[in-house]
Length: 76
Image (cartoon, rainbow, N blue to C red; front, side, top):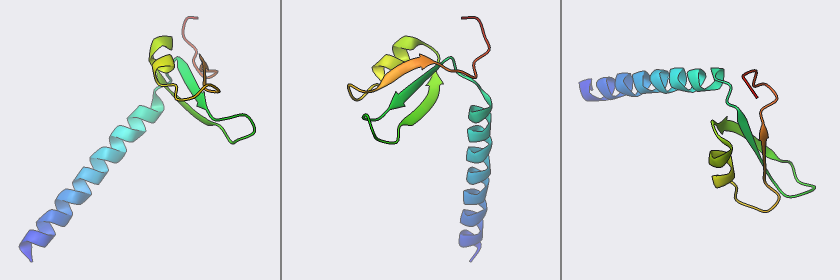
């Protein structure tokens, strides 16, 4: 029973740490976004790229496009 309680406590702590890291990641505004999806479909947009090259390397299809994040307020 002690092993189960210790495991559950460890699992909970790992979840809390993961959530804190995810929240910190969300707070950062990256310069570039990638919009993925074919025309007429609901696009998936991710804004996790520091450089245009990183964004371009993440493209998976011909309709994907990279652009400057509208929320980014740094130097253009």
